[in-house]
Each structure stands twice: as structure tokens, then as C-alpha cells.
Length: 371
Image 1 (cartoon, rainbow, N blue to C red):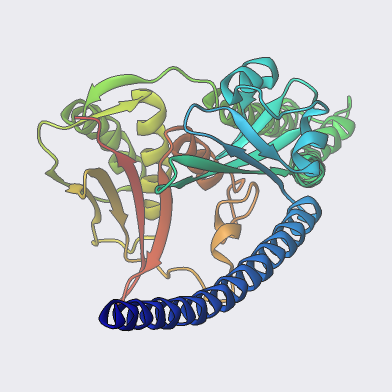
Image 2: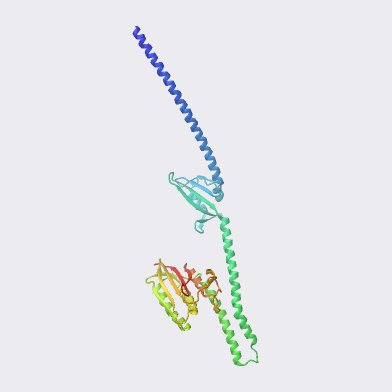
């Protein structure tokens, strides 16, 4: 009996000790749970504060922000995005929104909406969540200002051109009128014929000037066809012979652009090349050839016209050379290079010049090869 009581006492003591240990451990666990819970609540508060700040930032960004889920549905749209479309976007399909508002692309990534607004659209995928962020910027005002400036430049250019045209036409007409006013019954037939010849020549000058100006305008809408470059070369040679006779000088044509095609109005392009060649012949010294080279350079046709004349003075701006009625010569109407540039521009090509290291100029026409 005594042994049994001893065992019971021992077991009781063990249970009591175990309970005390358990209670101590439970207290530690509770403290840890309280700490974790406190940290968790602090984290939630921090995240809630962060969400509030992000939402505030999102709604005050100068751009519209739209967030799409992996099904293309709008799950978030800030105030600016809603203002752009003037409707609630959340829970709507982004594709259906575009179907309702999209009119057409304008330039680059600019898009015209059916409500008259012009926006840019930038898409940024979120790879981990398969969601997308779309940034929208309302550039209506900027686009309108750009168009106004462009129109103002066009008007200014037109006014300048009109002024130049009036000046160019006034000179031959004034001369013609002066000659006509001097014709009277006291002049003999020879003097009258001389005055009539001057009047005729000045009227022809006005007609040539008018035709060249009309040619610049027509070239903008001329029809282009696929043409083998050899055809341009062969036809050019025929026209060049006439210029050689006119100026008593030589034109050497080098050809290294075989089996190439460009999209062109052949006669217009030849006219542009001839304008440059004629300018070169006009300034080239006697006994020195004007060299014309056809080359294939980086998938482009390069047509070079090289003379050995005085070149272009450094103080003359590059763009001015191609402006209407600008000439470095004492004669001519200053339209040759303007017409040439208009023709090359209509081919989406480029025309430029370089002063040669020794003497003269080289004009370079560059047009993309299509095959």
C-alpha cells in the first residue's frame, strides 16, 4: 500500500511538472502569436496605407491608367482614363471599349477617338500575373497646336512663294510692257520687229515659269510604276546628247546599277536629273566632263551628278539651295533645283549635295530599290 501511494505521488508530481512546463510553453506561444498578430496587423495597416497612397497617386497621374486582367477585362481605371472615354470602364472588355471609340490611327501611336479626342496608347504586360497596364495620354491639345503650327508654316511658305512668283513674273512683264509702249508709227519695221521679239521672249519666260510651278504641283500626285533602272539610264542618254550640243560640253555617264527596279514616274525623274545636269554644264569649265553615276548602295539607287565648277559658298544654307527662286547664278529663274527636289520628295527619296574636295559639287539623289 505504501509503495502504491509513493508511485501515485510520483506520477502526480510528474503530471504537475508537465502541466507547469506546458503552461510555460503555452505562454511563450501566446506571446509569439500576439507578436505575430501585432506584426500582421501592422503589415495590414501598412499595406492599406500603401494602397491608399497608390490609389491617390494613380488618380492624380497626368495620364489615364487602365489595368486589365488575363481575360482582357478592366479591373481598375483611374479618373483620367474615365474622363478620356467619359464612361465607366471597370468590368468592361477593353476590346469592346476600343470597338466603341476607335476611329483611326493618326501618326505613330496616336489614335483618334469617336468623341474627337486624340490619345497615345502604351501597353505594359505584367508577366507574373498575366495582367496588363495600359497608359493613355490625351494629346488632343498638343496635336491641335502642332496642326496649327504646320498650317501657319504652310501659309507662310505660300505667302513667300506668292511674293517670289509675283517678283519673277513682274520683271519680264515690265520689260514687255516697256517695249510695247515704245512701239509707235515713227519706228521702222526693224525696230518694231526687235521690240516684238523682246515681248515674245519675255512672255515665253513667263510661260516657262508658270509651267515649272505647275509641274511642281502636279508631281505631288503623279502616278509611279515599277521601272527597271536601265530604262532610266537609256532614256537619259538620249536627252543628255541634246544638252551636250547646247552647251558644247561633255557628260560622262557611269552605270553600275544592273537589274534593279524602283517605283517612279520615269519622265519626271529624268527631268529632275536633267535639271541638275544642266546646272552642272552651265558652271563646268570647258574641256571638263560632267560625270553622272548610277550606283546600288545599301538597297538604294544612288544617282550622282558631279561637276567641276565653283561649288556652293559656305555661307549659303543647305536648305536654301532647294528653295524656289534661289539661284547662285546671275541668270535663270532659280526653279531647277526646287523642281528636282519636289520630284525626288514625291518618290520618298532624298536629294543632297556635297562640295568636292578639289572643285565643284556633287548632287546625290537617293531612292529606295523595290527589287
